[in-house]
Length: 322
Ligand SMILES: NC(=O)c1ccc[n+]([C@@H]2O[C@H](COP(=O)([O-])OP(=O)(O)OC[C@H]3O[C@@H](n4cnc5c(N)ncnc54)[C@H](OP(=O)(O)O)[C@@H]3O)[C@@H](O)[C@H]2O)c1
Image 1 (spheres, helix red, strand yellow):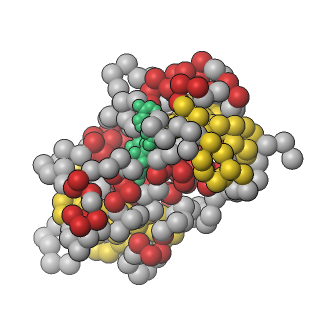
Image 2 (cartoon, protein in one colour; image 1 turned 45 degrees about the vertical axis):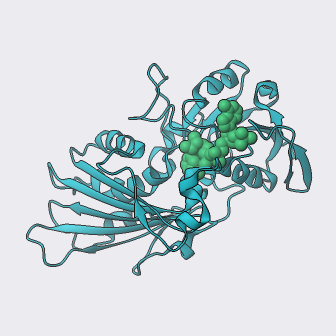
């Protein structure tokens, strides 16, 4: 079988290494190159091969049909341009091209929230892969927005906790084991996290005028995001899970459950698992949604692979653990 050559920029990072592992077991992809920054020259296993990280500036971009950019925001957009100029399609995992957070002058490209944007992603030249928190929140909110169920003028409250890989591989004192273990804290207080702008912009594109208050938390585990979302609704659905069950019927990577999901249900899997309840004891109707994803899989490399498969005209589920 002809295999499609794939390049990875930022291959030595958390998301990049996850991408390498997915490419290594993908039946229709082969690794064209893996590039790193400071860790250029280091070796890594990809499937049954041992590869050496190239320097980013030496990456043979033109050898790849598709390039994943897992570079930090601010660094990525220029390399997306270089990869395009070399003839490769690109899935960009950074925030540089996303709605609400894109760099000034960045081109408008499809936002790869795959289950919502499949038609725009299929065959696109460049896809902006969503942020990890934004993936959990927006997949949870999309069915309510599509049905006009979010109360007009409402404030949606999103509290979400992420494992420490969400902060990337670069060493930071506040992320040392002794600073994180056996503790739990909020950060980006005051609705200032970059993903709040991304979520706001995309929710508006879904036709909702809701305000959004997002408080991220640092959870002392390696990976996983659990989001608790409170949504004032115009009316409670008769069957509370019906909006999600209807919208995501047949979706291979969305699991709607009666019980509250936990990180154990989703880690190392490319799924979002979700439940919802009506909120008791409040004067106006409100839904509480609990959504769980693996930040490195459905929140990064897994969703990026779904998008890459669509861009390349392959089966969307190819090479992905369910
Ligand atoms: N971690 C997550 O949960 C997650 C989820 C969704 C999206 N994302 C996004 O995915 C991207 C990668 O995130 P990550 O967590 O994997 O970050 P990371 O672990 O810090 O990795 C960053 C990668 O970029 C390389 N790099 C950094 N600066 C560079 C430069 N100036 N030139 C060339 N290469 C450079 C690093 O190489 P060296 O280490 O060799 O220097 C490394 O390979 C980010 O844009 C992030 O926002 C991450």
